[in-house]
Length: 168
Image (cartoon, rainbow, N blue to C red; front, side):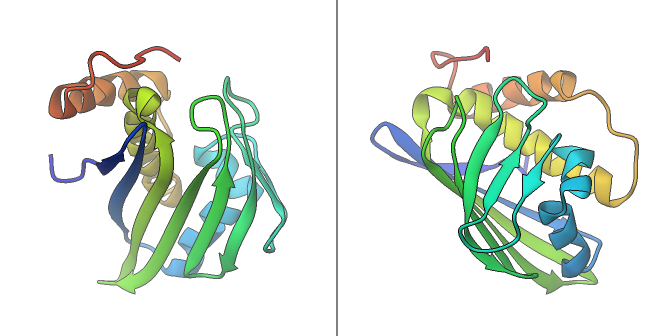
């Protein structure tokens, strides 16, 4: 599958990369990443202080809420966050947005993700980035768990992750 995320391993951690194209302008994608009401559409309940050093919290209504802070806030091109939750403490995520082909190319990276939980996180990001596409199109979103489990099987098979943590 060409849209699978890729990773580079560095000891006990990995750096993950996804590339996506969304048929919406960068400003609209930026709002989906930074406006708590838009984040709620695809990531869950969220709280955002829109400046460097501000709080950025999401998935507050989920089993592993993320609490972090804004490291780079450069609308509508770059958002970088300190990311910390039960599956990826003290890591960094980054969204880079660029106008491309009548829409927006997004390069998403998650650095310093624990290798031990990547069979949870890789398919999770895959599904979340798909949910972002659906939210941008104002489509109804299916449940998270079914597509996540389907993508988990793909990632486990593709990258040989069967010995890692498979259940949240």
